[in-house]
Length: 126
Image 1 (cartoon, rainbow, N blue to C red):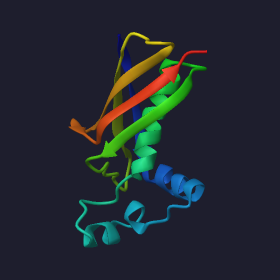
Image 2: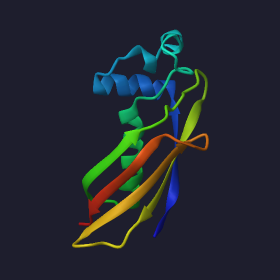
Image 3: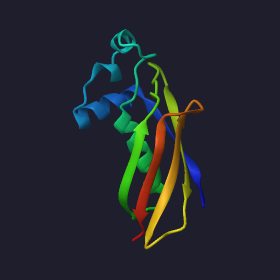
Protein backbone atom coordinates (compact mmCIF):
# COMPACT_ATOMS: atom_id res chain seq x y z
CA UNK A 1 0.00 0.00 0.00
CA UNK A 2 1.44 3.35 -1.05
CA UNK A 3 1.23 6.00 1.67
CA UNK A 4 0.64 9.69 1.04
CA UNK A 5 3.93 11.58 0.94
CA UNK A 6 4.54 13.87 3.88
CA UNK A 7 6.52 17.09 3.47
CA UNK A 8 8.30 18.75 6.40
CA UNK A 9 9.96 22.15 6.10
CA UNK A 10 13.18 22.40 8.10
CA UNK A 11 14.46 25.82 9.19
CA UNK A 12 17.51 26.99 11.08
CA UNK A 13 15.21 27.72 14.05
CA UNK A 14 14.24 24.02 14.04
CA UNK A 15 17.93 23.10 14.24
CA UNK A 16 18.45 25.41 17.22
CA UNK A 17 15.46 23.85 19.02
CA UNK A 18 16.63 20.32 18.18
CA UNK A 19 20.14 21.09 19.46
CA UNK A 20 18.68 22.33 22.75
CA UNK A 21 16.46 19.26 23.12
CA UNK A 22 19.08 16.70 22.09
CA UNK A 23 22.21 18.27 23.54
CA UNK A 24 23.90 18.06 20.12
CA UNK A 25 25.43 21.51 19.78
CA UNK A 26 27.89 20.64 17.01
CA UNK A 27 28.42 23.97 15.21
CA UNK A 28 27.98 22.37 11.74
CA UNK A 29 24.27 22.50 12.56
CA UNK A 30 24.22 26.24 13.25
CA UNK A 31 27.33 28.04 11.96
CA UNK A 32 27.80 28.48 8.21
CA UNK A 33 31.54 29.21 8.46
CA UNK A 34 32.25 26.14 10.58
CA UNK A 35 30.17 23.90 8.31
CA UNK A 36 32.02 25.11 5.21
CA UNK A 37 35.41 24.86 6.93
CA UNK A 38 34.92 21.09 7.30
CA UNK A 39 33.87 20.64 3.67
CA UNK A 40 30.10 20.79 3.98
CA UNK A 41 28.03 22.86 1.54
CA UNK A 42 26.50 24.80 4.44
CA UNK A 43 24.68 24.28 7.71
CA UNK A 44 23.16 20.80 7.80
CA UNK A 45 20.31 19.27 9.76
CA UNK A 46 21.14 16.74 12.45
CA UNK A 47 20.92 13.23 11.02
CA UNK A 48 18.78 12.14 13.96
CA UNK A 49 16.43 15.06 13.33
CA UNK A 50 16.00 13.91 9.73
CA UNK A 51 15.33 10.39 10.99
CA UNK A 52 12.81 11.81 13.48
CA UNK A 53 10.91 13.37 10.57
CA UNK A 54 10.63 9.90 9.03
CA UNK A 55 9.29 8.62 12.36
CA UNK A 56 6.82 11.51 12.46
CA UNK A 57 5.48 10.48 9.04
CA UNK A 58 5.05 6.89 10.27
CA UNK A 59 3.16 8.20 13.30
CA UNK A 60 0.87 10.25 11.06
CA UNK A 61 0.20 7.28 8.77
CA UNK A 62 -0.44 4.86 11.64
CA UNK A 63 -1.78 6.82 14.62
CA UNK A 64 -1.54 4.90 17.87
CA UNK A 65 0.63 2.13 16.41
CA UNK A 66 3.66 0.89 18.31
CA UNK A 67 6.93 1.48 16.46
CA UNK A 68 8.83 -1.77 17.00
CA UNK A 69 11.90 -0.66 15.06
CA UNK A 70 13.10 2.22 12.94
CA UNK A 71 16.40 2.32 11.14
CA UNK A 72 18.38 3.90 8.32
CA UNK A 73 21.80 4.98 7.16
CA UNK A 74 22.70 8.65 6.86
CA UNK A 75 23.71 9.03 3.22
CA UNK A 76 23.44 12.72 2.29
CA UNK A 77 23.12 15.90 4.33
CA UNK A 78 20.04 18.10 4.47
CA UNK A 79 21.45 21.57 3.82
CA UNK A 80 19.36 24.22 5.55
CA UNK A 81 19.53 27.79 4.19
CA UNK A 82 19.86 30.80 6.49
CA UNK A 83 16.56 32.24 5.24
CA UNK A 84 13.37 30.25 4.78
CA UNK A 85 13.74 26.51 4.91
CA UNK A 86 14.16 23.33 2.96
CA UNK A 87 11.60 20.58 2.38
CA UNK A 88 12.22 17.00 3.42
CA UNK A 89 9.82 14.56 1.76
CA UNK A 90 8.95 11.21 3.31
CA UNK A 91 7.23 8.60 1.15
CA UNK A 92 6.26 5.13 2.27
CA UNK A 93 5.16 1.74 1.08
CA UNK A 94 3.49 -0.53 3.65
CA UNK A 95 3.82 -4.28 3.18
CA UNK A 96 1.11 -6.76 4.15
CA UNK A 97 1.22 -7.48 7.90
CA UNK A 98 2.96 -10.66 9.01
CA UNK A 99 2.28 -11.95 12.53
CA UNK A 100 0.79 -8.58 13.48
CA UNK A 101 3.78 -6.57 12.25
CA UNK A 102 3.78 -4.22 9.28
CA UNK A 103 7.02 -3.23 7.57
CA UNK A 104 7.06 0.24 6.04
CA UNK A 105 9.73 0.90 3.41
CA UNK A 106 10.52 4.60 3.43
CA UNK A 107 12.03 7.00 0.91
CA UNK A 108 13.35 10.22 2.43
CA UNK A 109 14.50 12.94 0.05
CA UNK A 110 15.48 16.58 -0.03
CA UNK A 111 15.71 18.42 -3.31
CA UNK A 112 15.11 15.16 -5.16
CA UNK A 113 18.13 13.48 -3.54
CA UNK A 114 17.83 10.58 -1.08
CA UNK A 115 19.13 11.66 2.32
CA UNK A 116 18.53 8.43 4.23
CA UNK A 117 19.66 5.05 2.99
CA UNK A 118 17.50 1.97 3.46
CA UNK A 119 15.08 3.63 5.89
CA UNK A 120 12.36 1.36 7.21
CA UNK A 121 9.99 1.07 10.12
CA UNK A 122 8.29 -1.95 11.62
CA UNK A 123 5.04 -1.24 13.44
CA UNK A 124 2.43 -3.12 15.42
CA UNK A 125 -1.07 -1.74 15.04
CA UNK A 126 -2.93 -1.32 18.32
